[in-house]
Length: 69
Image (cartoon, rainbow, N blue to C red):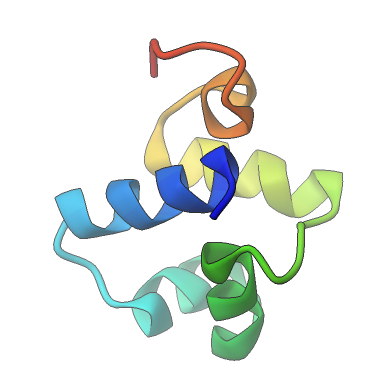
């Protein structure tokens, strides 16, 4: 599992959210979000930005470039 997918999982679980609720908030399919969280796919930049905004973290944090959210 990549740093990115691990961080997605941790952020979602810390907020006690389901994959479906996050996918709905991000306006993507639930299966697509599952792929991101499992590391099977990577999002396009626009989706990555929405994820960072949704979780209130930086893009660098999601990408594993820093440990400071």
